[in-house]
Image 1: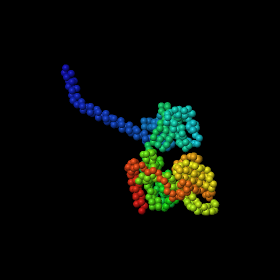
Image 2: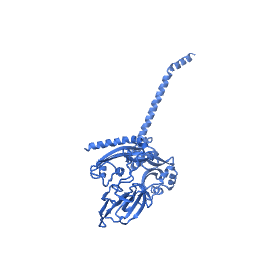
Image 3: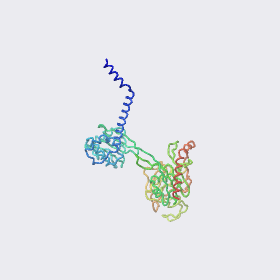
Image 4: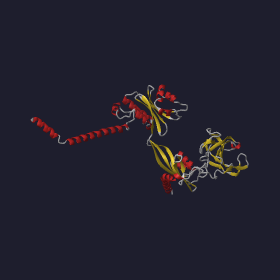
Length: 468
């Protein structure tokens, strides 16, 4: 009895603080969990720091077994690595897993290539192509491959496909990868980031040189010329001292710049006159267009010039000495001199009513724009075979290429503009404009574009101050 009482007293003595013991136990579990999480985090961080060199000692490989990415992870990350880096990484993975050696290879699609021909060049078994095409709907992206497209292929020495990567566009890519012996296909998205950038320049000799000095890409400067091309003839109107400022997008993929994006807002000061444009997506048709700060469309029904950056060799006149016929006659158009083969654009939407030789005009295209307007493009070197008589064309589409067919002493475009059948000077005729921002969207337009225009004005003032 005494023993029992003593035992009971012992138990009672140690149960005086049961809550404290549970709290200590919970704290211990929390600490242990934190240690485990830290260990896992360190392991994951180590995944991204694995050496891709080939001189790693084999005795060190087991230490990396838990941290080296799996073949499928390496495949998905392949767009971040050069081909030698990818091959080195794959060698480490194969050595650790004691797999047969595999190799990433890169293939550029050639004219006339098919997937079967590419697989043959890669020494992959023909039946692997059938298996891959059954890997899921995502593989349909490979049906339309084009010359110069790049495919990265991972295979083993037995001709078995392990993985394939194909860039669909700058935003998406296709990954076919073997998991547990079965090929699976998925489309992944790159991490795309759009940043804002700006540049300013002063024209000294040419717009292209000024843009190059300002760090603007050729595509962006062409877009700038397109935005203001309805008001400024870049062949005739540009003067030394003209200024421009551009706020535009830069597209980054996985942290690396890929290309320049759209112009958001821009200013061009030509011969002392200031033109400003801002990009706005019209809710009425969900189409992005450029407008003046007060909502008028920058777009006119016709381009001022059908040839980019050409030189005017002869203007509109009622009396001009013809260099071939050697006599005075009227010249009811404008001649743009440029290199043979320079693209000639349709100056407005319309329908081709003539495409063929037309006397001294040589190869000629005539476009009818509704019932009131028509334009003529003569002395072409060749036509755009996409368009024929009766074809509808959009403003800015290439309809032919500048040449010297017909009565011409050198390569140039003869361009005529007619209103109700009467010749008008293309350089001075008043062009009809497109619709402005609808009144019901003006408040949204002002709210959306005000920050962009404020940036533009700030950058312009800063550039002027720095250059004065």
